[in-house]
Image (cartoon, rainbow, N blue to C red; front, side):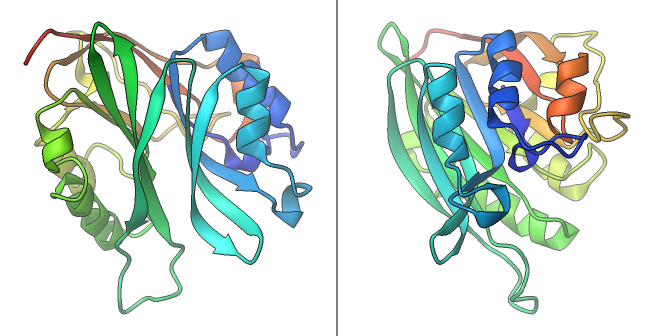
Length: 244
């Protein structure tokens, strides 16, 4: 699952990490990537949203703050009930001519899915400008991330809020090397994820690398999902093929 939780503030204006946890729990995912989490921020009651959600659904997690302001943090997390290890966190490039753009980052964990196989899971939340997003996508595809020797020969999932619809340059650059779960299996009808109440845009994506196949894809659109955040969660059932 990938899910932008909008600092756990719903479309009704109500702040509730517990409601986000109920949305996740209802889908019963093994691995969850969350974007726009607040940790210790005054605007959300100084809560550790990542820890609250993970504890509520009995998962372990790693959190990466793309933004730090003194003790306040804001960023992405990966949660799972499976054994995991942190591989890397880091910043993604911005634009030198626009130094005040919101900083963006990525988080990479390896999840033991059984049978001696580790799934490399990378999540991110890309910027709002097209040129900024493209630079960040290039960085993710480069040798520091998906092109790293510890990643490129292994099963990979890249997921998150890319702020990039399918016709954008950023999406096309990523889709040239990875497969979008909303394009498979054959006949799969793509469904938008934003905004939650009247979804029009498909900007939340799950991309697959080699040996990983999607057998079922769903954008969860029930009443609770439309209320809990301004994005809808995207869920994919995956199969990992045997390989070296």
